[in-house]
Amino acid sequence: MKTIIILSLLSIAFTNFSNPVDLNNIHDIKVKNIYGEEVQLNKYEGKVLLIINVASNCGYTKQYAGLQKIYEKYQSKGLEILAFPCNDFGGQEPGSNEQIQQFCSANFGVTFEIFDKIRILGDDKSPLYNRLINNSTAYKGDVKWNFEKFLISKTGRIIARFPSKTEPESEEIISLIEKEL
Image 1 (cartoon, rainbow, N blue to C red):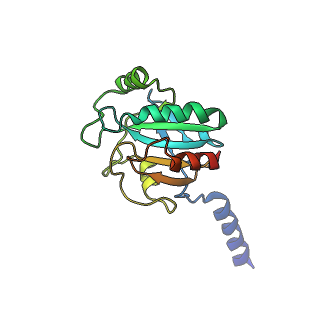
Image 2: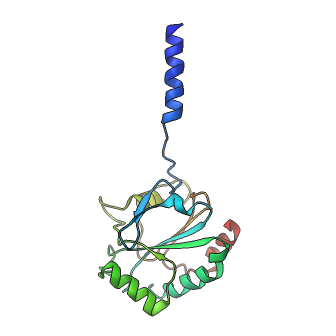
Image 3: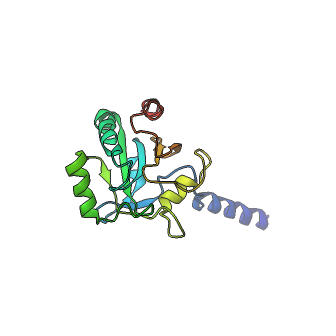
């Protein structure tokens, strides 16, 4: 009888205190905004997210314009765009956070959120990107280049992944955003 009580208590304790990580969800991850302040991604619960690794000196940099257009169109309906500058591909994002923010604002009128420059390749890869590329809902593997896109549901689940060449305003991305909103 004593053994049954102890096992029951251990079972209750394990159930209440174990919190397995959902590898298909990003809400438990913390990132830094462009000002260096920590942001818990569950802050965006109830919002559809489009997460992009960006660079100022890339052939795809013009996609900032399309990103801003869809942000303006869908932000009031619950879309947030989270841009993560990255210098991992050809050194195409050499600037400081301040320079990146100024570039995006001056050249593309960007009003969506830009975060702290991160690493998305190698052993010191951002925990966010480690999750984005290692889940069971979008294809796995390292990001190939700047402006790769990930769509996240209102509950933080990773829904889809789009290669750099897929324009933000493409039917493929827009139809999924509208479905999730």
